[in-house]
Length: 266
Image 1 (cartoon, helix red, strand yellow):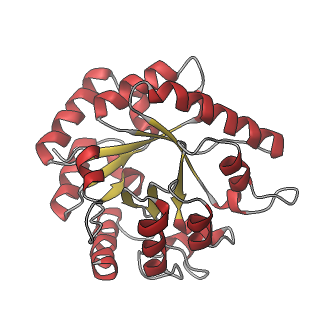
Image 2 (cartoon, rainbow, N blue to C red):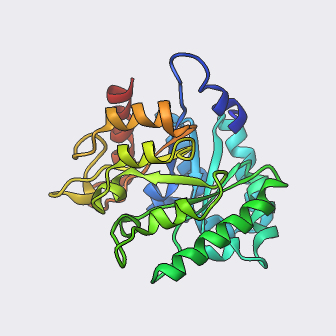
Image 3 (cartoon, one colour):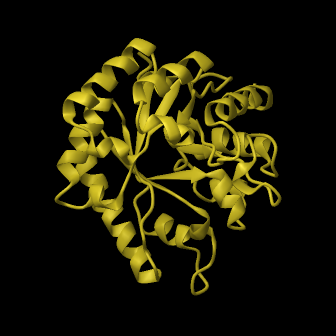
């Protein structure tokens, strides 16, 4: 099995070989009802890691154990999970720790927050910091995944900057590149402004015409510059392709995204 430690170890050396995985939300149409078949299919494509979205939180423990066994058989690591905000609250922390431990994940990401104003974003930062302290004892990290709204100024301040300024550096800023661009942000500038904190990236494409229907490489994201900044400054350990579209078959689309990634990144 490719563990997170092994995946991180691949960073060493001149090539900085970061494993490429799939955020399983990309194939949500099948994954929700057939996670086993979905994982087998993306393993055949050549994906090395996965991130599992919060559907897993309602699975019985025995189901999660069987998924972990399958991941081990497929030699795929679950490097991170996406979770609802409630998974970071005091009454949900132990369950979050236990389930991520079974999956082998080492990064617990808040997928969205629901914050409406600047005070709300500050509370999100406080929640992430406190959860991160608990997670650290279990060899887990807390993280936050952005959408476009975090890069749109709110009362003159971008919520993403509030999170960055009010959380310890141990909290990962998982950069969803496509949403950053859609929100008017510059992903390269954001990486340089937060060295060492961009350990995980969602390699999501975006274009003004196709928006999130665009496949990797078919939009306006400056991928080579993003990869250069992520690997030299951001501390990147995990690349996760994510496709949000619905206009074409999901498995066909993520296979095309992986092929394009290999051409662009090498």
